[in-house]
Length: 119
Length: 118
Image (cartoon, rainbow over all chains, first blue to last red; front, side):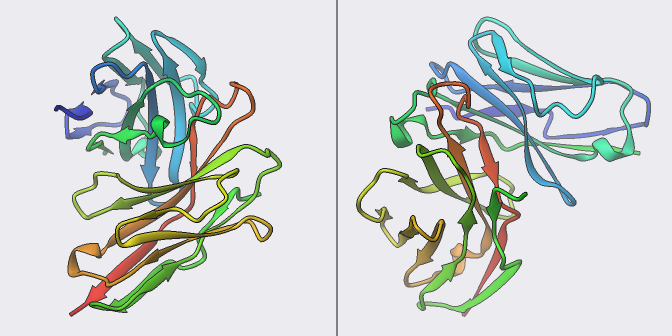
């Protein structure tokens, strides 16, 4: 079956431009997570979706970052007025809804990531 | 304070030997899960093994086992009979559960690069 897919795989943009990163989760997974992996910061949580709502946006680094999810499926992470420090690999993961105590049933499956380079 | 600490930036092991990758964690939540992921040079994150905080036995998955010492808050990954294909970055991660508000997000350590020599 299809795993999590992300597009584009690579994105090079100029400072100040807006970018959109897309994530297609595994069919049937209601939970979707965005993480960022950068050299200095490791892997950081950005935002969590359950269905179309985002109950946890605590990891978004600034108001230039936003995300939405439509139809309980595809999610888009938008970065406005990109800065050089936004350069990183943006990873998307999906899982069944997290329920405390249900163990690896809630394993997160990761996509291949989008490598963003801001010049 | 770091919630997940991986103190070994890099590790080397000879093919067919065993290697232990260290991970310590910090949480006050009695319910949590510990994960290990492998990230090869291709960049994908591959789930390896899971240990729940209430699990009585150490988790095992093929050549992977997790040495879980709850009192010491450590969750070391043991890879037995290393293979060249095991060369990758390895991440320890924790998921805290507190009745729903954690939402299952993972907190990752800084990772350990494992190199397997022939």
